[in-house]
Image (cartoon, rainbow, N blue to C red):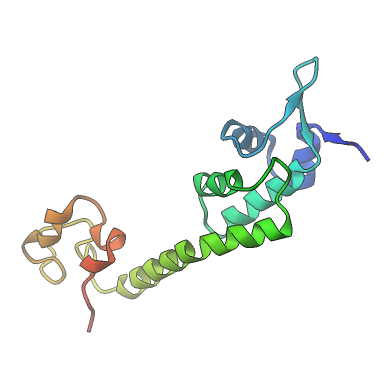
Length: 152
């Protein structure tokens, strides 16, 4: 069994495009060594790391969030099943919060276009006199649960 994989081999085995692998490397999520001809060579363990990255992306995590979790792991070896369990435990509350926000968005989605989400002055139902606008710009109801109106 080969100790190192080329970028093409890692791409083929992981199902991740070579451009994405280069991007992961630029972001510090995976690393490679270089041959005398300046070709990338990845430890076989990079395959597991790429699998963890892909699984974490599937549950909606950003590469920054994934990178922080990978940085917290001991050593430079590929994440183990125990490491995955630790990362998943750390992500649980963040994912629960995202789920709560998505449920709130889903439940309010059909009630009014705008709904103060963009702090529209014209939304008399949820944002009379643009009160939400005083708390900042952007989607205030989505980013701050305490501002969300209670629907009856």
